[in-house]
Amino acid sequence: MKKKILNSKNYTPECKNCVIGRISPDGKNVFCTKKGIKELDGSCRSYKYDPLKRVPRKAPVFESADPKDFEL
Image (cartoon, rainbow, N blue to C red; front, top):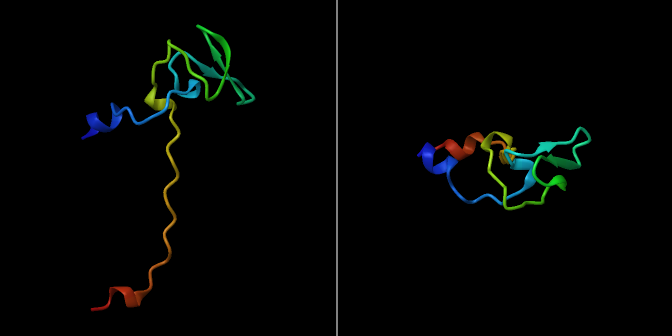
């Protein structure tokens, strides 16, 4: 199952998740060794996905449970 999650192609190619690029200190651009300064959501032919750079989505907030919901 782990292999399926890490290797799924359901992500969009963005420079902020690329192995080659480094995010600038101000967080608005990416410094790419191949293409120079790029935008965070840009991509190019040299794009290689780095799963460690991806920021996961926030967990959904659930409503508090009422004890009456658990009674039979």
